[in-house]
Length: 449
Image 1 (tube, rainbow, N blue to C red):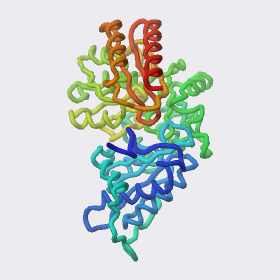
Image 2 (cartoon, rainbow, N blue to C red; image 1 turned 135 degrees about the horizontal axis):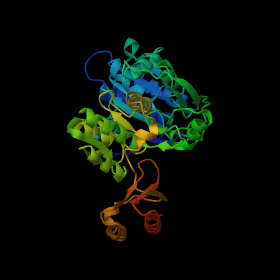
Image 3 (cartoon, rainbow, N blue to C red; image 1 turned 90 degrees about the vertical axis):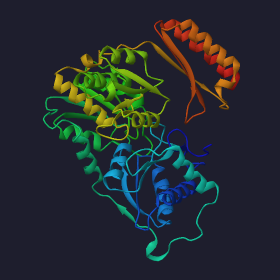
Image 4 (spheres, one colour; image 1 turned 90 degrees about the horizontal axis):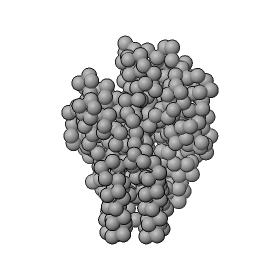
């Protein structure tokens, strides 16, 4: 069992365990130890978002890594997918992202990438934890010239901008389009507007004035209604809102309607099916995705494979099955033909390429999928026992599924980062699913609250 790592790295309130400078230093030493293989000079990339606590944790990580005789490449604030790209591009041994993604500024997190730009598997995370908790710290520490050095990669932003632009077809341009971009006062605040501007668009930017405390505050992918109002106010043709670390996005059409990850996947997968570019005619999604997505893909002769929640699970299934498109309803979309992880900027560019190629508005493209009504209820819990071991919850879920028959779905899962049980009910009758979700929420609160 892992003690530090959750579904997406280590996360918590900054300066309270496990997100302290002391633990960050230990994680730095551990990641250096795990990836220091051959007798040569090793390098690890470190990037972050715009949180105030990023300075503290970055300095501690640098100290830990250098103390093991491994060099550090500092890229500063850069989207998570940008750090994955830089890690692979510079042939570094690993990458570190200091970010709590969509969480408020007082939280922070640390997650790692392999030299291929992929999130670490469970077995590597367990190796890191064993180093920390089982006192596997080697007695010999490097001294003199063997101590690690830290270097700043001054052109990291430019490298990533060029990389992102190259995923957009060279023969196309965004000239004539007005694009509204909400950068959540986070890691994408410099690169996102630049990418769209350099491809020819007129860019309207919000959420581009980070102060260390305003990341994700009433802006970004979690508050896409703010972008929707900006699109309507400015008459933009297209809107994109990324989250604090830039690995996911929500889109807004020209009418101000929010387009979620399911619709983004439907737009991309159906087009790829028509062009014969969707590997094995299969899209990978999680259990959270709407049933309307399955129907949209099936109409084009494809199918959807589902995984547990979390973009890492999506990527693992894509690698296992040889698939090239997958993602989550929350806007983490992975285009394996272009990148190794979710990327809000690249996701927006892939949809824009469809708009330009087909000469259709985003609202028209999004109409390829019709969503079933879906309700999500969060219940705070004091503990997280196996839900399958609680008869009352098992029986209640079975009863709800029986009422929905084959015209809906219901399931309960725990949040990987918060003390919450998430209840999802989906069906064709909105009043019915709201009532059923309320009943399940009352039971979960009684059993676990």
